[in-house]
Length: 150
Image (cartoon, rainbow, N blue to C red; front, side, top):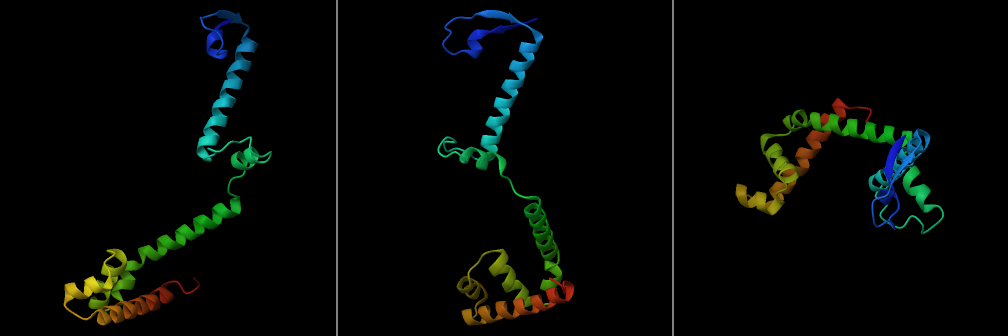
């Protein structure tokens, strides 16, 4: 036999009221509490902050419709392809001239705009633009050689 406090279960109780219940009732109450906690965790995980009573289908859609296995597989394949491309970046930059590689790094990786790169290097911004475009072309040729099917 287990002892429970009814005030914890029923909010209208103003004082502690202890009752002994059988083990079966105790297990049923624990299972119900676990289910309610799991439900709350699913609401948080799926960001279901809106009223689930708004539409008859809203709760099921929010809590039970996750990504399909195909979507998960496609995301993993795309992530793996991106990681392969990033891993090959140093080799691709080596196929560009040092000036092209420096300007591509500054523009795409460091996020510096072309006029600022031109001021830093003391050249016209059209030269920077041309160097970046040609550097990307050289890098693309390298990537095409490394990953012919992609």
